[in-house]
Amino acid sequence: MRDATGRAIRLVGSTGDITDHKRLAEALAQAEARLKAAVEAASEGFVVWDEHDRLVMCNSVYRNFFRGRQHLVEPGVAFETIIRAGFEVGMFPEAGSDFETWYMTLQQRRHVYAGRREQYLFGDQWLIVSDRPLASGGVVSVYTDITEHKRRERELASAADRFALARDEAARARSQLTEAIEAISEGFALFDRTDRLILNNSRYRQFNAPVSHFIRGGASFRLMLTEAVRLGLINIGNRDPQEWIEWRMAIHHNQSEPLELQLSDGRWLSISERPTDEGGVVCIYTDITTLKQREAELSRLVDSLAIARDEAQEANQAKSRFLATMSHELRTPLNAILGIGDMMREEAEDAGQSDLIDPLGRINRAGRHLLQLVNDVLDLSKIEAGRLEVHPEEVLVRGFVADIETTGRPLAARNANHFVCECPSDIGSLQADPVRLRQILLNLVGNACKFTERGEVRLTVGRRNGRVEFAVSDTGIGISPQQLEKLFTDFTQADASTTRRYGGTGLGLAISRRLCRMMGGDIEVMSTPGSGSTFTAWLPAHDDGR
Image 1 (tube, rainbow, N blue to C red):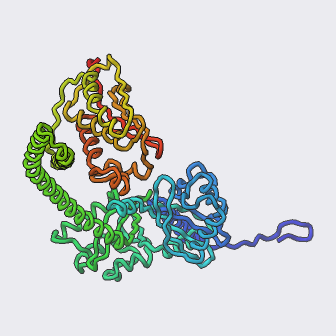
Image 2 (cartoon, rainbow, N blue to C red):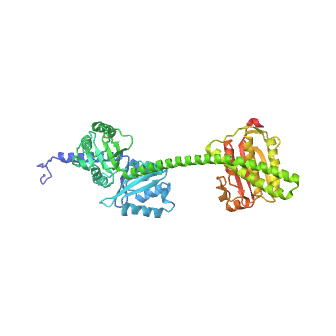
């Protein structure tokens, strides 16, 4: 106090003890720091949006989803701005090219139909996103990686790895984070460095309902685990309970990948445990019962398919053995019939019985056609049974092609075709089975002559790119693209009308391609309907073959 002249004449003051207030503030700050560290340490994606859909908090895992755009994932940035940035770099393949329509659907899922949804990201990554509304009007989302489980769905696959993104404003960190953890569909628990429970949500308590009376602040993880085993909550099989508890405790502190456990009621849990910076452990429990059921169904399907495959292979081998036996049984009498027919024709010619020559000729041609069919069936059965062998030897290409030319000219003459053969004199030699190579080329030349009338059939031989090529081209009816797809299938021709008009069994090309491949080559075809076709049989060339 001062007098009229301004001189101090009395000093008045007061003091108060604010120790409790300071301790409370420090405890709150420590709790907030532990929670932020726990969320940051979790492997799941975690993000909170306010009532205006602006980012409140997230962790580095969520931010790293937006590769190349991480600088936009900051507090106060609108959800649409961040998502549009991801859209522009192709982060959401399912969005297509219409961002507005896709974004409107996404917002309905987040706000109107809040719950679990699947999200596909570029790089073949799948997430389960759990959106839950907050009382404040905002949204909390947890992103769980289910890429492995998705893979198992396609080929016995699905595993969960979650991503957590978290950041908070200092003033609302505690309340918003606690509410967000309670809102997620996964079980959440945070333990301190002494393995005492600090925080958990109702979903975690549901998973551990039989020991819920132990789930409270300060409860020991070992104590809760021991009680769960004693009450039979967890299916430990025939293992010793104490031994199993020690095994589980070791994993709890040093987990390298999510742990899958089955409860006694049949449910499956995926448990992800990660250490915090302060030495504690954050635990995320996810119900993967449905995924496990799908995995079991896929396993049963694979087993049944394997059985069906074995049965089909056995049936195919039995068919091949039957065809081989029957073919041998048919060839013997056919050869006798052909021999007798030839003799009778010669006798008719010598006796001048011209009225018998033509019928006997038809018998001979029909018998040879049937013998060719039997030979084709026998070759096919041997190939399928793995008993057909090729015997490579050196083949002088020029002389070999001259023999094919001699045989091919009469075939071309039947339909008034002009046969042209082009083969360089210095073509050299190659390693091949001459019998099977002759069979292949005569089949290609015969087909070209059969499907061409009053046109040209050309056999062109040459060396190119380390291989010897035999190209048979014609100016015949050609083959459509649809017919080309099934051209080399057993017992298949272009279509039914082709079979009726030109005959044949549909085995020649199938057998020829397989023989080519057995000798290290193949048959390729190019065709234009109405203009003709070119079939190219090629075999590997040898440098010393020239």
